[in-house]
Image 1 (tube, one colour):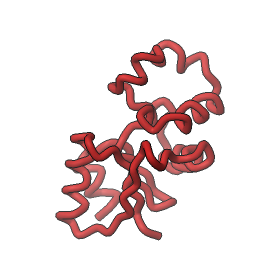
Image 2: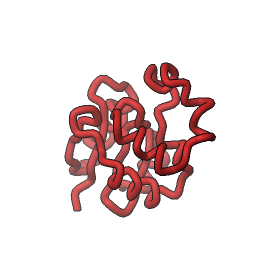
Image 3: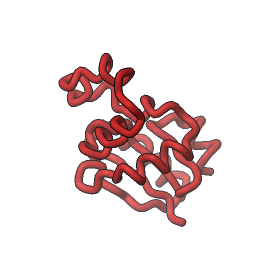
Image 4: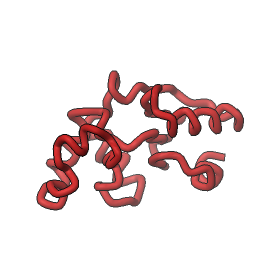
Length: 118
């Protein structure tokens, strides 16, 4: 399976990750996170494959996150409600989200990319 690089083109972290993938000759499918927001089912699969807490999937530095006051609300929400919310707006999802269907990385840390995608 091809690696999916789910990103927002204007995001500087996404640009760094994309540069890393290109420099390491890693083929990927470029997916615009707002135009092709992952579905609730896809997000649930990514979350389970990632091994991290669901709240890590939220873009906590995003304007939308702050506007919705999610810092305080997430703890009250069920996992199902959180997944629904993430699927409702690509700008709420931490990016880039990179996956091959089995492995998932969120954000860009060069050490993680070296371990997972090389």
